[in-house]
Image (cartoon, rainbow, N blue to C red; front, side, top):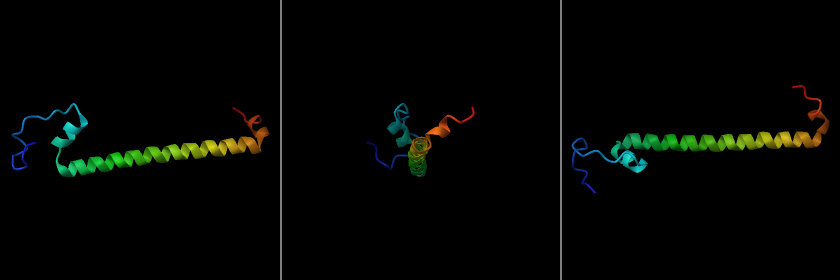
Length: 75
């Protein structure tokens, strides 16, 4: 690997085709912010999945306890 004493600008372009190559070129603060953004997106996806499962579970319970309500629904 190259030593950190080298200036970043004179370095030849790193391969940005891979995610690691693009992340290595970025400054440290932006890399930290990017990691935080990825964590926020992952937590949002998991929370949405849990919410969808909860809604489906509640709808399933409602259909079990009140089976006649499904037929009386108007489109």
